[in-house]
Structure formats: C-alpha cells, structure tokens
Amino acid sequence: MDIIEAMNMMRRFENLPEINLASDRAVIKTLNSYFSELHETEKDDEAYFQADSRSEEYKQNSIAKKIEIHKRYWSNHSTFYEPCSLSSMARYDWEKITDVLIQRNDDDDDQLFLFIAKYNMTDTTKMDRTYLLKKFDGKLLIEHAFG
Image 1: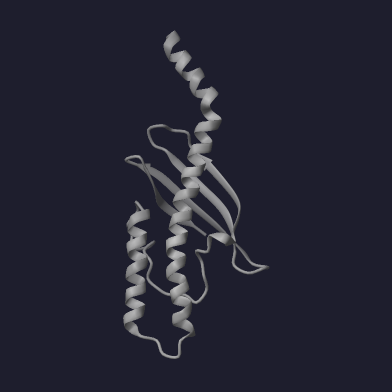
Image 2: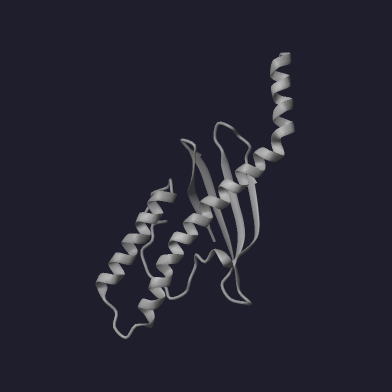
C-alpha cells in the first residue's frame, strides 16, 4: 500500500460515522416510503372489509396496486414475495415499527443492509420484521424479507 492509498483509507475511517449515518437514513427512507404506500392500500382494504358488500373488482384492483408498489421497491421479483391478498389487519403501519437496528456489510462493490425491527401488531404482540436491502445502480431495493 502506498502513502496515497493509506491516506485515502484514513480519510474513509475518519468519515465512517457520517457515511454510516447517511446509509442508515437511506435504508429508513426506503422502507418508510414502502410501508407508507402499502399502508394507504391497507386503509382502503379496511374499509372494504367493513362494507356490507364486497366486490371482486375492488379486490383485484387492490392487489394490482400492491404489486405496482412492490415492483418499485423490490429487486427480487419472485412471486413468493409478491402481494397476493387483502387483510383486515394492517401490516405496514410505520408508526408500529420499534427497536430498529441496521446492519451493513461495508462492501463498496456490493452494498447490503439488514433492517431489523419489531412490529407492534397489538399492545401485547410484537412481530420481528427483517429486510435485506441491496444497492442497485445507486438505488436501494429490497432483496428479501424475513419474519
């Protein structure tokens, strides 16, 4: 390692806290946007379940909206992760996210991030939510979900 490489490495170490903070903010912003868009569809779904009559057309349109959102935020287009149903219980209310932890691999050439959090389904029930995000062409996208 020559002196210039060593100096560049030292600068990077000095700036690491700011780099990590910016990365954490990008992960949170991505997932917050994803959750917010899906939660809007969940609010409509809740009204659908409370209605006296339920139309098949609404159901198909709601799922189609969720798939559109999914395609914008996900890099993994496996049908396993694709939305396919409605629920009367919200699963994407960002206000219910707590205990957030973000892990990163610090590989500049293949950046990966783990978003780990608790989702408060009810006052007494918490569910683990973990997402693996990957940087593609400068954009963070969800690769996998766990929990």
